[in-house]
Length: 264
Image 1: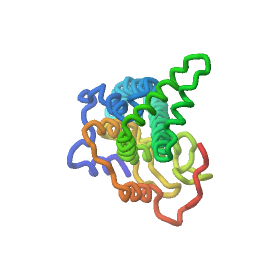
Image 2 (image 1 turned 90 degrees about the vertical axis):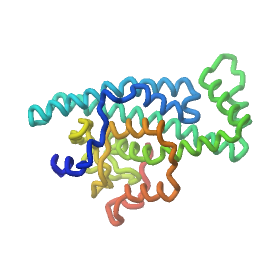
Image 3 (image 1 turned 45 degrees about the vertical axis):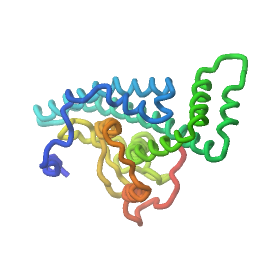
Image 4 (image 1 turned 120 degrees about the vertical axis):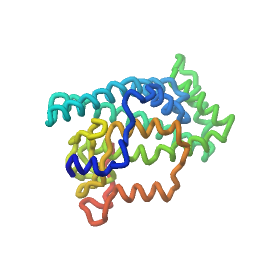
């Protein structure tokens, strides 16, 4: 696909808003609006870090695109720096959401098997020193004990972010491990290779299954997806989630099908 193909696909208008129109606080607000994440000051710090770097990268993406158009060739030094910074940002977002999703899943599991009180007591055990991290975790468990309905909100947030997280996870596996999502011992097609998006300048990374390209996603897409949590409360159905994951796996009969992905 060449650049003209990219433009023809979006003849209904630009798919991205102007960089200067982005609310710089929206990404942090959206992340901290997720149940359990916003209640932990240390996770909030990570969300804040991502939010303050986002406008820097958005402007950098726009500058790379502007130079590409002006010079009619890839500005290699600038694009290389953008690639490095983009990958670091994507890794950081992945780790924050992975940590939150793991913690959310554990909270639901403890609520379902009656283990919340036992876990709270273990975290509040007096070991002779003050442990701030454990105190905050214990406080969150107490909130769920006092209001069991919180678990429904946690489940909802997990589903609201599921497809976005899977896209991020697939890109992270390719960039960091040079493997294909959910396919262990596989080899990614072009790990780390990104094309400059002709609308916003962010680097488009392939969503692929080891043989076929299933589309692309870039850093701006992930940032916009997070910000969209503020304005959309829609929750995908189990069928929609399963359908998306099946699509991402690609046609059957490709190399490494049905082999479990190696551990992280």
